[in-house]
Length: 500
Image 1 (spheres, rainbow, N blue to C red):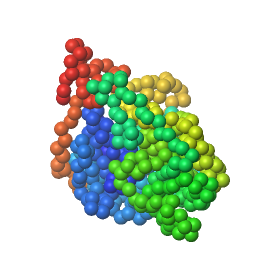
Image 2 (image 1 turned 180 degrees about the vertical axis):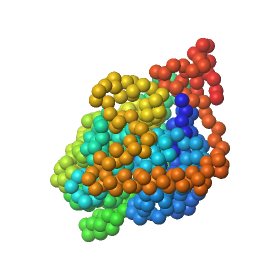
Image 3 (image 1 turned 90 degrees about the horizontal axis):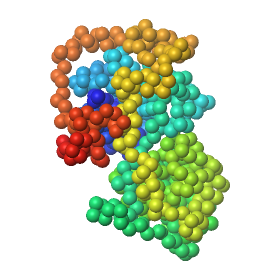
Image 4 (image 1 turned 90 degrees about the vertical axis):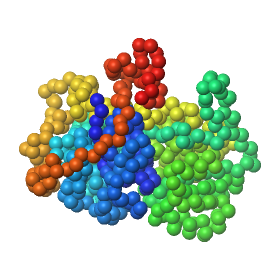
């Protein structure tokens, strides 16, 4: 059945990034499948009010104070009135929050549960357990996820991390990875398959590199400490000294950009390292196809969508073996390194030698990535989560086991205030009492808003014309219509296409 869904996060376009791209692509595919999706984020420079994006995706840019890396000031309650107004106007049934560091996300989950809505949270990052920042973030995450219906993580490593940080039942956490639009990340020499060619499409030509040919290494990343910029700064001079016919192209911005520029000036590498600064997401492919190797020195990463994009463009990937990165690509597409300077230099040298010897068939990477990752598949799997939390499919089918004596409230969330308070009270001796106080105040604000601004006084927004809801191939056929490639439908009775 189709749902009205609100995607909530501080991180969305025009800011580039993996979370931003994930929300946009997932929302677009859910709309293609017949659902209604709106995005709620904070206002960006030049982006305020309501905007419509491709495919009828409506974005609410709420004016809030941004304090650090596009995260808004956490206020807990001040977001409730406008959030309630949007939810009622758009007739939202499911609130889907994204990113652990998004204040909007956590506040929206709290308010949505107070309003009796189903909630889902997607975690895109990894955090530690020892430093003060991680301890605070983990405690707040436990607060938010104590009353969420289901959690999605982008990798199995991310799932293990989130389960430990928020003390979750592993059965209520699903792993659904990111994906890429392979058509937007094609190698320069790639010949797309057409109906006229059929199966006679010419094979991609291998990229031959002689011993004297220049190899270009591409780096596209935010220039922050956790992205391994310090490691990159230390490794570049050593890589260039060992391999004279190597050049670097670095795109991205951040506080470490100054350190990178100083290293280039100090080592006099202006002719071997090209700094592009920040690039738009639609320009990433044009930068990648200029190179042969993609270097990803991140210190922590839950998934790493950019390395999938690089492989789709036909680049050989050198990356650190951290977080969920080893789960992303098969071994023949990558060379792994420890997050250490010496090992990163050694791994890059191995990748250069492999390319020069012709052992790596990068011309085949695009078709392989296209078969592995698809946003349509991600949307179907996310839709199944929605079906599970709304009761559209049985608990046995959703969780993969029969309810038993061990079945607990963690997998069957109750809206009753007393049940919610019980869950929050278990978050800690002092934190549990504070969380319960927050929930009670939130509920009182909700009652006040119901009197002060009755639902009947809020105008219902007109919906963008919906596409017909499309079932999965494993679900029963509706009205004799069966899903075919793309968004067309095939009539099972006569095999003809029905254009809708």
